[in-house]
Structure formats: C-alpha cells, structure tokens
Length: 418
Image (cartoon, rainbow, N blue to C red):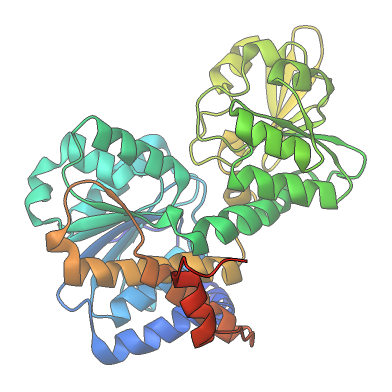
C-alpha cells in the first residue's frame, strides 16, 4: 500500500483518539452500521482531500464499511493530526498522504497521489482536488461521477466555475446543508477558533477588543463565543444585510480601517483575499494578535506584513512576532492558516457528526443517482438534510411533535382565513 505519513509508531495513540471521537458521532455510527450491512458504495473509488482529524477518520471508516476504496490527503498543510494519519494506514489499511507542516510542493504532491486512485467520487474541503483535476489531471474526468464540497470557500470556487462554464462534473455542496452550516460553521467554528487562539497564546479574552472580519455563519459563531468570554466584539462587513444583522445582534460595526486602530485580537472568516492588509497593519496597536479561520492563508496579507517587519521571530509554537520599523509588534497565529486546526483539534466531534453524515449519505446518493446529474453545483437533497437532523435529535434523546391531519390540511389550504 502506498502512503506518506510522519510516523507509523503514532498509530496506537491515534486509534484511541479516533475511538473517542466515534463515541461523540452517533449519527455517523448509525450510518456506518447500515453501510456495513448494505454495502451501498461497493466498487466505488473515493479520493478525499479533507483535514486529517479524528472526525475525518471516522468518515473514512464509514465509507470503507460501505464498500468503497478510499484514499485520503490533507486539505491544509497545518491541519493534519499525524497520529490519526498513522492509524488509518497501520490499523485500517487506508492510504493517507498527509504530514503536518508539509511544504507547498509536498502538499500538492500528496493531492496528486490521492488522485492517482482514479476516483469515481471526490470529497473536497476547499476545492483543491477539483481544481487540480480541471487544471492538470483532466484524464481523470471520464471516470468521475460527481464530488462533494465541505466548506464555504470551495463552494464559492465551484459556483464560479459553473458560472464560467468550466465545471466538468457535478458537485454537491455539503457546506450548504442546513445541518452543516447552521451547526458546523456556527457552533463548530465559533468554539474551535477560540480554542486555537487560546492554545496558541493563553491570553485572557475578557475585556479585549475582538475584531471579527465577516459575519457569515462562521463569523456569527466566532463573535458569539468571543462575546460569551467577555470580549468587546467589533464586526467588519461588506454586505449591508449582514452588517445590519450584526448591529441588531448587539455588536459594533465599522470599516476595517477603523477597527484596526482599536482591536486587540483580529479573526478573519470571510473566504476572501487581503481582508487585513498593509494599511491596517500600519495603524494597529502594539501587541495586536492576528488569526484566520478562513480556509486559505490569504485573508491576512502576510507578504505585506513581511515587508513591513524589520524583524521576525517565533515566540511561541504557533505565534510569529513581527517587529515593525517603529517598534510596534504584531503577532500572527498559525502562519495565517486555519487557527482552529493549526493550533487546536478543529471542530468538536459532535458537530462534525452531522457534517460527515451528510458527506457519507451524499456519497451514497452519488453512487445511486450521480449519472443523472449535470456538471453544476447542487444543494444536498432535502431528504438527506432532514434525515441527518432526525437522527441527531434521536441520538440526543429529543422528541418533537408531528402535525395533525387538521394542521396539515390548514397549511395546505387557502380557503381558511380568520
């Protein structure tokens, strides 16, 4: 078996951590049990480019239980948990190409090695498999049925490809499932981002001015959690509707050039490039902390920060100190990459349970219905979204009402008024 991981001796530790995550992923567990019996993915080759975490490991085991032949590579150079990668290779015979801290060349070499599997289905988190196939590996397109995308950044990329008429195969936007973005993006990103910042810095959030760039579902979650720990939250936005919502939610809203002057901690969650840039660095406080929870390390203009700095040193494991010409010091966390995965463990397993349940069920849907799909971006079928929600509620011991016949008739009629 071909693979490339840091150290197979880490496998035992990884196995225990995968087991711990599994206990907090009951929905995926139920799907795995059914997949083991029914083998709905029999004969399917799946290449996955995802964060190599304990939660992802449980998704890989579920797909394999369903009969698929799976290969995994990392979707970010700093997000790999090396013990998990080792365990998947050594204990479960799943080829993994991922090493935490790998350089850009190695990262893309791993992407290509995952694509050497000649997949029928691709699972992406950020879109690197799909973009590499379209730009460099078009010979693979003939066998690909469809793919899925896990995060906002990738969905944006694929919708752009669809608009330009260059998307060659269908993509199901798992990120747009309600059981994904309303929970994973909001509660997962909110908690794990703060977890990463605190592990990297051990700073007190209470009393700090905490600037959140972007008020999508990830930004909402980060702002709420920071507020809950006593921070004074400022939101920056370009969308007037989201900005208005942030104001109504009780946050101060202002342009980044104003927020830059007062912020103690900055977090970008926009999916766009150079959200914090040279003009902002020049007015920041001494000691300002910069972090990113968007998928790519482009939201903070790191090249500009490098140009402005007269000195750079690593002061803590995930903290780079940039000393500017005037003596001010700015601190960049996790090299500007996803701080929740660079310095922490990513989203809690219980929220990834729903996201990866969607992935597994969408892989099954593609196997059954993918040949009928056109090369465009699709939403997760509603019946899958609702099934994931139903299973999650059941696992939590929560029951809900059902409509009476009278209520169903009322909702479907127009004759009955006041």
